[in-house]
Length: 126
Image (cartoon, rainbow, N blue to C red; front, side, top):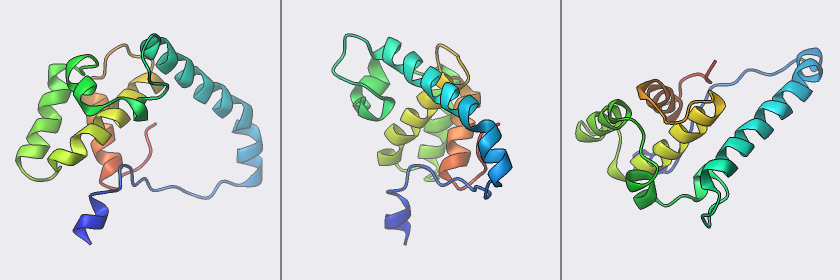
């Protein structure tokens, strides 16, 4: 079971949406997703990648570095075995997506903490 779970990048709890909530939030949710895609596209312009999921692990550690606090948080989880070394890159990709959602230029420990929470089955970001 542990091997299977190590292959899952995000495990978020969700709640069913009522038809009225879904209808009311549809256009704003689409606009938010499009804005995230635009931020990602701007950052990755001139590279062979289109999305955060496409960026190789080596580039996440060299070119697209999160803040040292974010890296330290992830490294601490990897050192204690809570996060496998193989899982660091997928979590970093999620960290960048959260940074794009929050409109920050470089992921911080806050985005890293949310990504870790999502990986471990916590709730969706606010």
